[in-house]
Length: 150
Image (cartoon, rainbow, N blue to C red; front, side, top):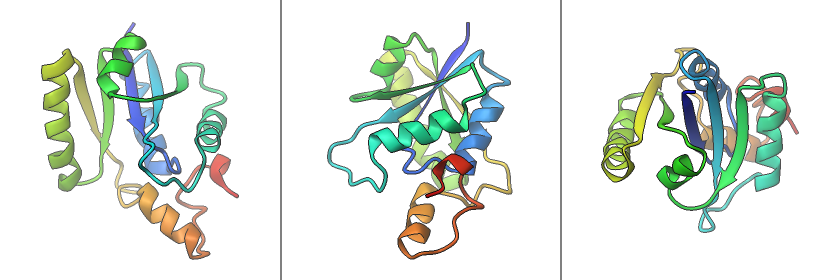
């Protein structure tokens, strides 16, 4: 069975994330959405809310599992017996950032990274943009799954 871990903070999960996850299902038997816990980071949504948003977005997809984790992503991958890390790329800046991490993960733990380029209609969407829109009372409904709507 080919398993991939799709790690992130998902604060909140966006349609860009959904695009990558859904397309990842054509490559992997199971995609594990792994919500990383970083105690130094200030989140808009609680860990429980983020997990619930994701579980509700994929409630009809049995090949999606949702977990939270602390520490290194490669250690989490070993725990769930996943050989791949799935990542989405919106632009060349994302690629430059992700490339170094992927090379380090391969070197540390022999975990391969698989990159999917986001679909053009969602390549502009990021969690930080959505949070800014929410903070300022803007309409963010077209950027997130229905499970995130307040």
